[in-house]
Image 1 (cartoon, helix red, strand yellow):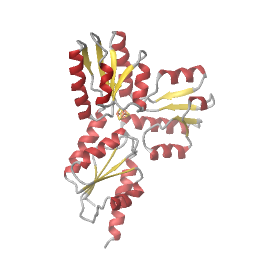
Image 2 (tube, helix red, strand yellow):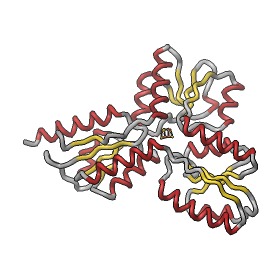
Image 3 (spheres, helix red, strand yellow):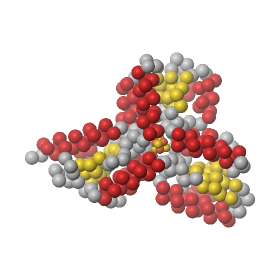
Image 4 (cartoon, protein in one colour):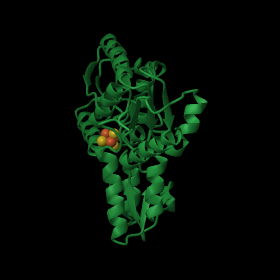
Length: 294
Ligand code: SF4
């Protein structure tokens, strides 16, 4: 049905694709593969790899030398790699190159005497990983309430980076406030808005699709920052639902009192950790359900 459209750019980004392809390739070689923590923030993608034979472990102490460990796209702090090396545990580091760039640049700035500020979610694994690479520690700012941490810093050099999947306009608001505080405290401030391009494009295309749709369906993990963001953005333009499991779309529509028929313009998009196959399957499912209604 032409009125059901999947956004031109959505679903698995390069970073998540790399984790999935690397895991599949190692399993195909007959390796005993273990994913260290949820490799991407999407239950179905993790289940897909689990079904292929990859185990998922969440604690370093659970890992041992007879397995090949996959490090997720969000990255890990140095202590994880130290543990793996010390215990002779083989691993494939699938930290996304965009995240690695942040680790490298923050270290460079620290060597030049800058204090690092990360705008991002306090407990997000990418932020925790980046914090770990800032060996002298980094200040994490998630909301305005966190800004008071900057009051004590005077006559210093500050370097500001951002969680790759953080909300762009929220970053801009916080950056403005941080700039004011830096000025008042006579601090030099260098800013690198490190929001991922994949994320920006997924959002841009989703919003364009939402503008010409009657309803939008966002597929993604509820713990995935970029999917949550996507949902917020498209909801502004038309009634929208956010589902983790494509087979629950009808229930979710009902729960939100949204009715669809064969002419409803339905837009489908997904966060950067969702498999494209799931979206194609969802489109088929909706078409088949609508065809059952005469
Ligand atoms: S969203 Fe961007 S930064 Fe995050 S894993 Fe994907 S490509 Fe990398």
